[in-house]
Amino acid sequence: MPEQGPIDDPVKARQLAAALNRAADEADWAAGVNTHPRVAYRDLRVGDILAPHTDYRGDDESEAAICVSVKRVGTMVKPTWQAIATGETWTFMNHEECELTLMRRGPATEQ
Image (cartoon, rainbow, N blue to C red; front, side, top):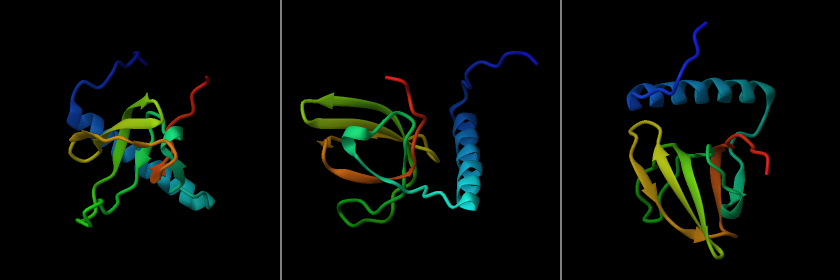
């Protein structure tokens, strides 16, 4: 089998990410694993998937998004998220002690 490189088409990449996430959720749910953990901003990592939620204004639920970068500024954490369905990105900053609900944890990395 030939080696595969990165997926350059953002639409195909989002479709693959969504399919993999659905398959992983189904496996976790079948095993009884909690796929909606609450984590502190200080513990965010690239690859974490944000659960759909109602925004701070009380507007309709947002869509699921994947964390594509995490920057720390003193006691603040500034994650950048990319919507899985649309590819839209956004960044916001919050205190490291604040929590949010994830749909799924990203892969652990060795430190």
